[in-house]
Length: 231
Image (tube, rainbow, N blue to C red; front, side, top):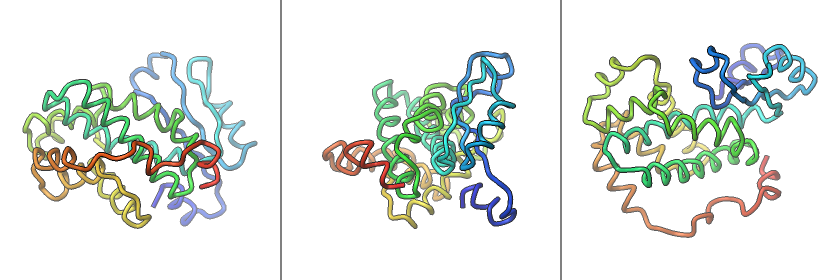
């Protein structure tokens, strides 16, 4: 379940808002420029809360797509572990760019199936958060992936981390949600199998590389207008 669904079940009369986007906390604390998505179904409430939280250097862009903001923030952590593994294996920049791009396609597929909008997945809480997390070892999830790619056992990698690597716990939930919605997410599934089924990293990589190559956008909506109707 998404956190908004949990809140709706426990506190059905309470409005829900989600703050998500490409934010390293240390940079926010230093007052460095940052932009985020603030998602809430109640537009008036969203504008009021964003006014409290936002500033000239902490820019809050409004959205009513709570589901999209939540999914982007969760799935990117799983994909960041995959990118970290490629860095630990010294696969180069090409491989990471490919993983980010194909990972974004997986994120969009899951988002649309869950009722999110494609524009949200391409925004700050989707592509923005994904690109930040997957391109820096400041990311707890990417740095954990680097250790895994270097041959460090999962338990030891977690102990050596500087905080919670959410993707370790989100991978299984992402797989379960994708299976329930009949969404194919080979990269996320591979990460889940490495983390939770003890699958060898090289075997998981080989399986991904052996997948048949087809039309790049065959499993995605052809345009934003059509995508918006999925939600």
